[in-house]
Image 1 (cartoon, rainbow, N blue to C red):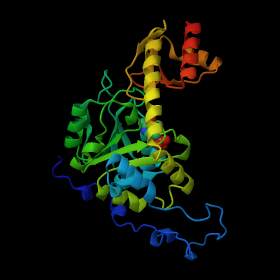
Image 2 (cartoon, protein in one colour):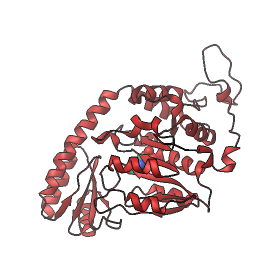
Image 3 (cartoon, rainbow, N blue to C red):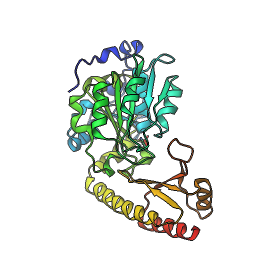
Image 4 (cartoon, rainbow, N blue to C red):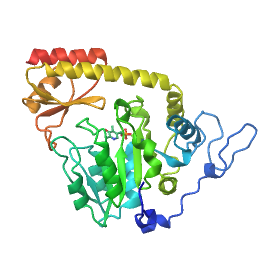
Length: 349
Ligand SMILES: *Cc1c(COP(=O)(O)O)cnc(C)c1O
């Protein structure tokens, strides 16, 4: 349990006093038969999308709430995790004054968003076993350090961070800890969602882009205390989740067995692919994965990347990331795609 935490102390002054845009659909959103809606300057002729979408995404949140055991007022949805993360920056980080901590090699968007918001990004490299260096992180943090991003399972290293280290960071760090769980469904480790209520300074982000197979609809999810969610809600664009996305997300969340089956088969394929990669002569190291991708060290990443492109296979070259010299990242594809990758690698060796 986190003690002595004062959220107000971390929020930017202009955000505290902001008045949210009041949308027509906020005031009266139940579009029931027989009512006349002439409040939002919409076109009255039915196209199935002629009305503004529900600004609070009530149905999607209700279903998520049921699936995850988190109440709806502790959930915020964004146009991808990218929007969720940007909103978090805007609530807590004063441009040119505050800073954040990230742990490279990690997801590139944290640094992009820091730059976009004119916020300094203090980078504390992971240790050689891809675990956070807790002492250095806590030493680097000071009064203007508002956010600490922990990506677990981490992209591109594919490992989960040690739960004891994460807990220490949540307890000791004086700002907000954001745990990015984009890949949690592929991991055997438990989500931090089950402990959300212990930590008023914890934000957990997830997404429908990976395990749920809906990268194209852009739906990111943020879980936090109701106080944090209510501030994020205040500054989000009113109609940030369009109606088609809400409908598609709800369909998928109602068909959760299919999601679980796909995840199971991706994990099965991941283990097969890991093993097969190990047997390739020029593959020097295959890192264990808690995600739907595998990081592997090869003899010459630039050369192998180019050779694969010529064979029609696009992988991610991470050789320029810290600790990732000569590393390629392979997303787990279908059985056939993975077999094609392995056959091609055998040909090249
Ligand atoms: C893919 C990924 C996301 C997903 O971002 P969306 O905007 O929701 O598609 C978030 N975090 C990490 C670390 C990722 O790799």
